[in-house]
Image (cartoon, rainbow, N blue to C red; front, side, top):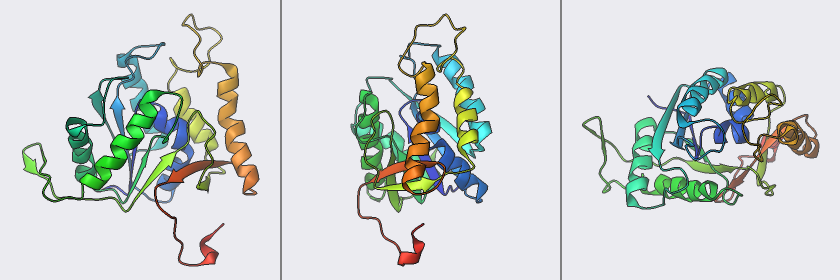
Length: 238
């Protein structure tokens, strides 16, 4: 299955938290979007890997993703080496996305920066035909995405561009709330984590509102890039 967009996250819920509204919007425009989680989030303070598996599946249905896979790398301990790069390359060649979205280049959680660099490097290497990979016994063809975008996570990095996601923020939040074990619940007996507070839940809205304010829309999500953005004409800008 060829996808238009393939979104990677170091952990289940990274994609929903950071670019969920963008994905929902692109799907509404007829784009095929898939999600690949690098780990199962097994080191997470709340819940279990099994619970996260179920939550991720439910979140994907809410967003309307065409496919979701988990590479089952070690949460907290995966590295950007040949072994891990080859597994990511297999996903890129399997789905042949034009656009790849991945973790923030710099963030609070060490897996986010690692995941960002790992996926970015794999996108380049995936285009080299002398790197041979097979999946389900079939040889894969070289494929390099046209662009790699990095979403913004915990840290308020300055975006290189933003996407107007007005009308899609509620789908994003619904997909996040599928991760019932992870986010704010006043009745939960689980330990409180930075993302399990009322303030963090509210921040999903007010951070998107602030970016929207800056481009004169209601809500927006921000991204950083690895190379200059290009437009065909000034009229392409919102």
